[in-house]
Image (cartoon, rainbow, N blue to C red):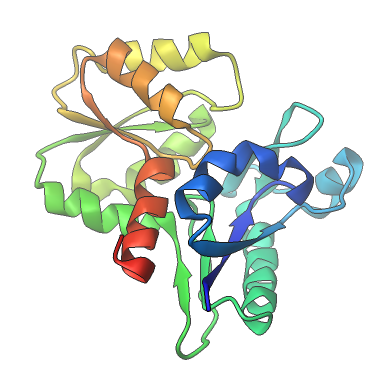
Length: 224
């Protein structure tokens, strides 16, 4: 029997074809089931149900209609928790959240609930770098990210994976003269081609969680 893995995206299941690269790193050896925090919601419903106050943490995700949306991290957390429990109930022994945010863990014995943030933090600590670079989607996320990665002596710039690539290139250029050896694209929306762009413009080595996490998961489940 195949291992079953549930993937939870911050956006909509209708837009899951943009995660084909992640699914292809797991399939066909692993059976993949998908769910989205914003499944079935219109732009107006998202604005109403996931609103956040100034100063509150928020997350950024793309939508099928081609724009990005900002949603409350706290409200998204409650939906992620519910979706994870439902995926476990349907026979998925492992659930991976396709977001580098922080989410509550369902207490389900014998199952794995994996967050890229936790996995990447362990990897980054193991690199033993004096200073690390990060690219986050929005300038408004920089203060919370500075607190989150304080132990890693972070240098942080912002560019959305859902915006113009010229903005990402400019953010990467800003690292060229920074005293960092490694830049992390701190959002699961950043793809492998975007990582190559960051490497080219920054002159640094780049870690792309969207590449690292599925490969780590497959090695864990199948020893491949």
